[in-house]
Figure: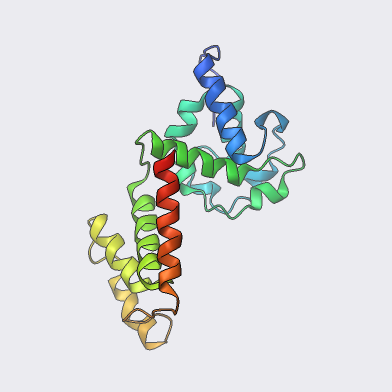
Length: 191
């Protein structure tokens, strides 16, 4: 919870510019939020956040953008859009969380290494095979997070029940998938 005793600094131009940039990227305005709490009440991962969605919005309203960028909440957010759907004022909270993640990455802030490792492993398998490869994601994630045997006991039963494949399944048209990834990389480099 946001501490009432926190001394608020007056918003400087950099804070205002950053908030305007985040709002433009997300296509929303944090000033619309009147703190009803419906977003946080419906969030399936709020229990794991240091600041639930309502408080992230409040941090931004109070020009505490650095606190929002340093929170683990932006990395825990599942982008399920429950918060955005529940918002009576139409604040696109999930999209704003995504904008905060992108800004944090631009500033070299990784947040929770496990979340970033999972995202990287997921995207790598999609790029290589055209779809997810669960066993590959698990192996890559566990290697990067230094927990090689985490969930190892779950693998064999899932393979036996046909829930995951040991070998990756490749889709037709993987070349188009690689072109999508190449175009995204080009756009990142243009910025």
